[in-house]
Length: 251
Image (cartoon, rainbow, N blue to C red):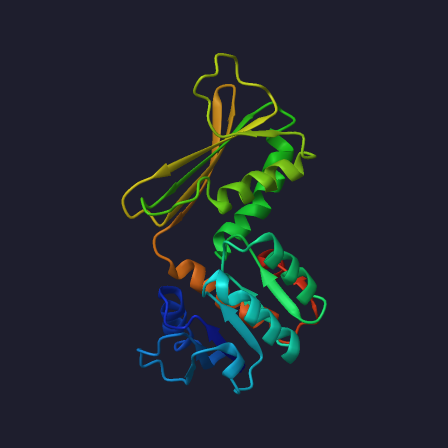
């Protein structure tokens, strides 16, 4: 049984993960970290990671960027693997993540969904077929109206996966307004839609002469990210120091 600490346990994702882990026979949450202890989680909750004295095999982090520095210090000191899901880290924090990975195992990914990470692998093979054949490539992503950044990190990861398979010869374009010219050959268009309560929809389109091939991933709830984080925690427990990502989890 993998013993896990939930960092940010009373946030939305922390609660989704708590519910899913309660039904999983391979992993259990032995402690949580959150500034506010207003939930009946069934495990002790500490207001700071520094105050946690419960032994564990791995930490899953869905907290805030401001809490990541102390989390990394704790993991470095305890040699405790961490699945780092918090986004919006500064350049300095990303450097600290890299530094800490020399002392303990860290798994970081642009998207925790098992489906998205499988799609990233599939796209590499597709790109090697359709790119040289002259197919145009477009990425369209849709998210809820409250999402602030555009394009999404996942859309960029999908584009990067395709571009990497094609020798990074393609440039990205995010806005074609004001342009009056034919579409260049080696260009990946990335478009963002914002509206309503859309959790996340990503389409990668390979458009050729008289044929279009589309790859779609639709998230209907945030539980898909929670499930991925749990699988990542199971994978990371006991792993040697180093940087890992979801590609390692799905094999």
